[in-house]
Image 1 (cartoon, rainbow, N blue to C red):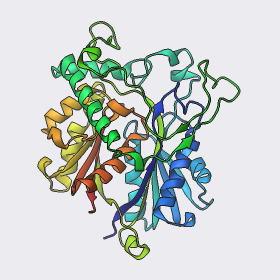
Image 2 (cartoon, rainbow, N blue to C red):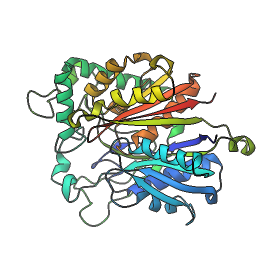
Image 3 (cartoon, helix red, strand yellow):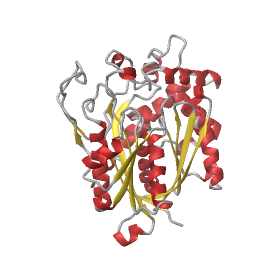
Image 4 (cartoon, helix red, strand yellow):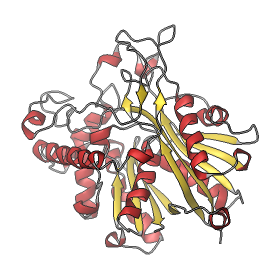
Length: 387
């Protein structure tokens, strides 16, 4: 049976959505940049790439097709953009893998991108001033996070401590330069004419690291932050992920190809599962998707060496961790979105690439990437790490 393996990974740094360094950089530019570098790292010829699948939530149109051209891929490379809310990037990996496993493709690319822009609708200039931590400016997801916290008795203090630990782990990883090789620097674009130009424009900068601001660095400072959804709320800017702009890409090929090319693949895509849940509990979708995934592969929770769980809100992570009985020492070992930001369509690809690299460092075998998704869904992907 054919198998899809991941041979390279590249991503941009993450910057604050709407007001950050990438606020004038188009999603197609971000994605094209990371795809070009991922393909270059894989050492494959652009003509070999049959399809580029990309997760994207906030940019209309087929961003993948436009990004393929910007990445230097030929007109013969197709592109498809997938929207499964926060699980869009993971969905793109599954799509690219299936191109190889079931359709006979030799090489495919999976990417993820989001770059929020003020404009008509949800992301208007007036709403751009709202706290960046809420995944939607109208507070829908923050209210859902509060609902989960109240329903499952997850107090504000526990949420703040989880966020603080995520930041501590991310700081250690950054000090140890564990993510430096993932990031391919990109010169942010300067402001252009029209409504996209924000009042607080700054000169373009070279983005070579994650630069989303962290609103608090101690338990006391976290406790002093106001709730996002009224005085009785529990979600704050400190225990919710800041929305970010950024992109990531993986190159996949059939498992027999790397050896003849002299490549050492990072690992293999083994499968994924999705599951629906109540819309007001969208963030806890992994509670339903993970058991389905493990059952299909005849694995138990304790068989998984590392877990990457999307950190949209601390309340969601705590409930998923406890309900699934995940070992905290195997979960988000280098921190997550609570520390570095959440580029919605990007996160699944970023998490997969990172956990494969970290899995190799720790000599792990089985790793899982999981997240909830808006509308009431969960998704989980299983990967095998190659040592």
